[in-house]
Length: 392
Image 1 (cartoon, rainbow, N blue to C red):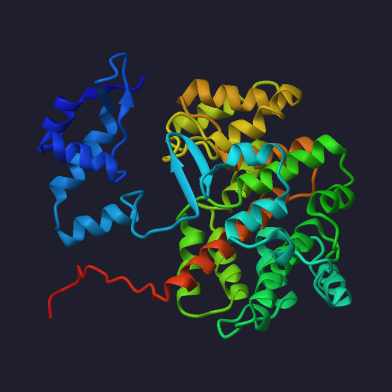
Image 2 (cartoon, rainbow, N blue to C red):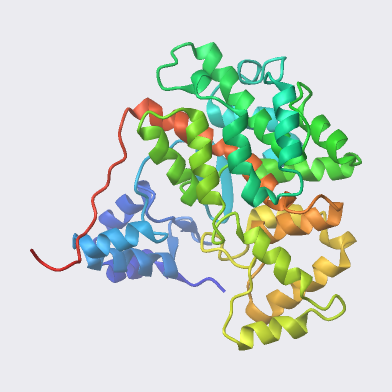
């Protein structure tokens, strides 16, 4: 249950005046919640306590650095994605609303602040024979391992290089990069067809299955400054091409604490007893291990992205429902997007490692958005480290 403080108590906990408390609200550091009395507001106790702890740290460099790098205060401005009150917004639009019926191309264009017709031209990227050869060469290789070398071999820098001043060509280059990524995920040469149609035909899905995959791509499109998106911004800040940005994002995404989490969930799921998954879950917890795919620091009440997907999967997938229910009963944690992607893959019987592929495909849209925004700032991201080694 969420606990709240009155304005007076919140100000006292923070050691500030009521006026300063209201200034924190206007700056987005706190959120004022309505009460039955329209003249009064209340504030989440946990949020107030975290802000008070940050104030106590003051300007001590070591503590400030730790807080900023570990789910701490925002470190840069962005107009792309907002995570607030358990909801996800793309440029002010609710991502869950977009996921209901928007086309992937439309959401990509929204995040890139480009006309969709400019970003996704009528023709697919060239050299389909090269792509076919690459796909054949990496056949059977898990996408966690294959996407980065495949993408590097299938693309070139020129269209999205820093020196590229032709806005039309740059816009087409953004769409082309995503189409190449799609090609590598669904294992077919690039096509000019709408992504929804392309997915359905490549994986032989019915309309309902195709729509689930479309939803997943949109819900994975961006998630503020996660590790891969921050990596993408750092790469973009050096003047590298958008292709290089995606390669950097893929490298970060492959780690087992980020997109590679889907492979951990797959392996864990394979070891479960389909009839009674709680047995292995209890053993894992008794050994002091975490359950991969459950809980998220930014969604204490449950990952809204996972809820949207699983609402259409769990009623028709008893094994996944039993897994999710048992894990939540034992830990109090709800499934996150990683679990939802694996459940989606298994529910639709998609190829192995498709969960990671869909994550990468969706997130490549966000990496491009962050790269374009970072380019506009003209700033090199070059933070300083707090030295803790031996003194000279």
